[in-house]
Image (cartoon, rainbow, N blue to C red; front, side):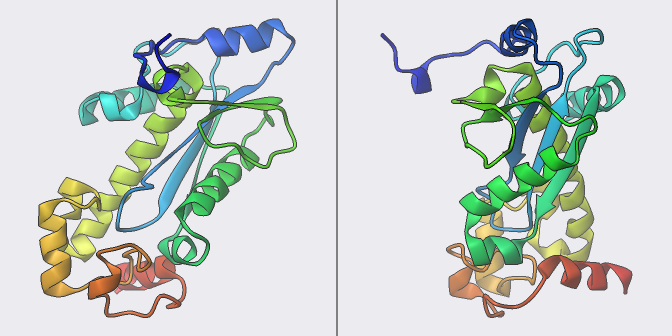
Length: 227
């Protein structure tokens, strides 16, 4: 039998349908984006989709072009029963590590949902939640609700990267979104890190001008943006 991690999946609503058949009424999908980035917060979203107002074409956000993600994000926000987005800043990532920060962002997103979910479907990572949950390997490629969450989180994070690109134009954030591309690595080597880089990540740490315990990096960004 082919291992689950290497299998090709079809994104569908079967998990939500099965749970609703068991009596659950507010099934949320949760996902995060930006774990591998060298810059900025990790974002997460939680979505309760409406069975009466489906959004066609949902899939893992990484499999969709930017224009398609924008269209789908607008439809999700319009048609979903509930949705929420949360972020954990780079200072916290440096303090608690990216895995724990990602889990924190996902819990924060779930906590904002109104109505509260009675079951949560999560992309791979188990969460400390007071409701039943199921973690799905490659969940954003298999489950509509998780895919919807990945799209909202990705669109929100990309929009923030475009804002930060105007603050730190030499780093090319609008194009690579903070990931370790040759362009980004070259800028870090030549210019050092910004207050919004994840100082605990290599190669940022090797070229950082800031101590790891440098305070709230989102606050530093807000100060720079207001200037």
